[in-house]
Length: 355
Figure (cartoon, rainbow, N blue to C red):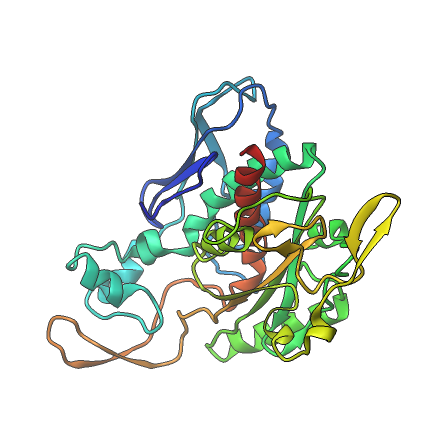
């Protein structure tokens, strides 16, 4: 089913943007693992809405409540279930959208698939709100991975045409980035990005960007070829995040413009360990980890809910409709999507490691 993911650690995400609550069930966690709840809360806060002028005005604390699966914060072998209440909904903002699909939203496709019974409020289960339970699952998995020396981090690689520095492809360091309210490597470029977002907001418009994520400390030989490689599984999880429209690993699309002699990564041996001089392969060869940092980038489309007048069609009358979207929306999804990308990667890698 579309709301389920994983082979060894299985997660199921449930709820809708304006339902009473949203949540996640995580099955397959080993018993006896102590979860640091404060760290989970800190991670969830990075995604939470309504924190600044470049975010949606909708305020949700994203406070989670664990229903099952732990005793005294220690996993007990039962499925871990956590819920997050939706407390600041304004469902009336979506009344007129029931029959007038918003451009670049799931509205029309969902209306056709579910014969008009889809939940339009806040986007229903197609909403970015559903990344909150994904972040909970990812935060749990990240703690398990850190015990094994595996760390995951991401940063805003670009907003519009403004680009941040890239992660060092050999020695990735992202601890400082994760502590920032606007997670970039180059703070000057970050200020330019913020201004780009504010300009879009002032013009009743939106802007997209890219996010770069790295996984360090991966042992060699994790993964599988053909359909179950690390690239395959990360891509599948990442595309479960609304607004993601592209992904590349290592040198990615840029590598397609190079000669093999330029793109290949030479092998060397240092202190008994085999590694590559460069990391154009992004830490994955044949779907299997090479021991180098896994590095990938994703493209995030501009927020489709904008204040400018747009054209749509009434699905009942089939008449042309002009649409101006109200409600509360992010002028740029990218900053709040950074921890979501980390969470998706963590769920995938934890699933592989437990195999």
